[in-house]
Image (cartoon, rainbow, N blue to C red; front, side, top):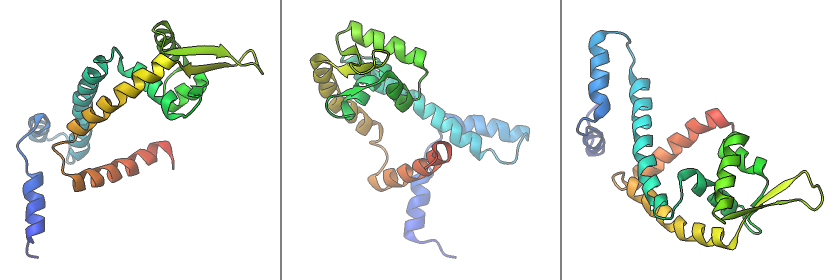
Length: 179
């Protein structure tokens, strides 16, 4: 079958300069330990990309005096809608954290005056976590910068490929999270 200009474009687009994983995969190939190293290449690239993305996002959040975890808590409360209140268990379940990790994040944010914790009037055992006015103002200021950083991280990926990548990742993620 003859190659079309579209398939050549795709080949050229995906025949990019070597990245850090190419050498590692090449070394493993010469050792003959496995026939299929594609999973190692895919997961290795995802791991490396994750480190680059986490570092870039941390710089963005740092401009607002927030760590990644603190930003995540404030963003989760903000996206919940008015009155921007959730229980600690709702927070840690939506963020895939342990209750202990959530408690320390909440302590830091409360000490900064960005959230408030209050006992439920109906059930004194229940606690509600809410954004303070300062917390809402901070997350509203930080969110545009966060989105700008995310766009910058994807700047080298054409729009159509972003859509395909998003669909592939969503399909893969649902295998772990369920539908």
